[in-house]
Image 1 (cartoon, rainbow, N blue to C red):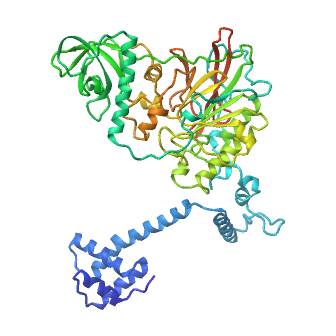
Image 2: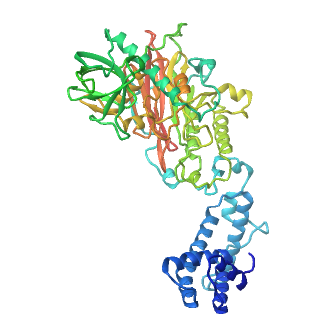
Image 3: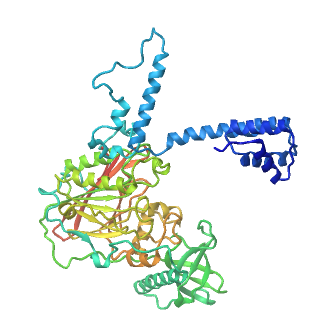
Length: 603
């Protein structure tokens, strides 16, 4: 810090047209600069701001007042900030060593002032001559600890609430006849399991792509094609003779097709529904009156067919709503073996750490479950490195996010090596190290060995898998939560989860909501190619923050396995036992369990 003199202060004051010839005033200002550790320019800036707002002249008395009201407060806040910054600063292994050494010296100094009656507070020295403290031993022990997930954070203290959780392994939801079922994989788990993307790697999203540039015209074209495609499906299924333009005045009942939207930026309600037609029906919007509909379920982005009157061309009085039609199920070209052993599938969704610690204890518990139950396939959905984790938001990690993710995956692959099960990794929008775009490309794991790569399948979000003739739809994006906040209904007689899942299947999309929520960055051209359902899957896995469930919706078994952790406590995971019957149909046994880690399974 450069030396502050009366001349430098005088020069700075003259810049603002303030003449000062009183040496006592200048000496006082020099003293304040030294005590507050600020330069002459900053001192003058603060004084000008203070004096202008209070109408004061430069005297020793006003400087005393200025010192009390401004400089002292700034000095205290600066000290507090410095302490907090030092406490929260990201530390490497060397800075941790220095910190531990300093704390040990401080403990020694405090021990020197302890009363003789209490004796020394420090333990007697043992060999070696300079032993590490318990804290140092915990943080700086063997390389195996540094390579373990528990070393990802300076505060790698295990979550107390997680370690004290109850009802571990308890079955919370089941589907099918699960009593007496042997929840174990085949004699050789993963052996002979045919697993891959339904549409093959050439027609699936297999690598990253350029994004952050979309023209409104291109987005409009994608939405228009969606309206036309689903509209033609509704027309042929319900034998609708003709689709009329939405804004054409007509004295007779007409049928129109379009996309549901809201008349403002607010939440959709029964009085704000608009129907926006495709280009073939004029491409215009018309308000919809729902008062004559006995039951309906609508959400923004839904393609629907409505029958009603539009005598003025300015409002459609809807009298009938045509629901969407789901796609057919998968039919194998080659007949599958009917006497094959049942297939055991484990499903878990991140985060894999408690919210108050970056220790991966729940993940390690899940690995122990996999080793114990020996499933054939493990479907593991992100986030693996959660962007919403408290310590990640505060930048309190000691390694790059990519390094944490790599070690996490290595722990899973190496920990399940003895089982030999197939591993499927699905990314999440909340994976901080990965592309923040939807559809989301698969992870890249260049460090996997050839043997490891044979067991690992990396998929995009969303995707449709084909596992031994059974189709499984997967998405880690919380579409249930997003659509649940936007959907409106009346007189349907079904629960909200069932309605939303039915919308996904009848709209033939993994994310039918438009516009999407703010946290979903949609690339519509890629979404048109890779975000649609090619068929109705046998199993649809949609993890959510909402309560876990298993439901049969239009013949599709829909599963929300919940999340492995719920804040600081454990959550749930799922187990599926799939048996092909003699009628070439799949029999599903599903169970949701509370995790031995945090939230383990919905099996």
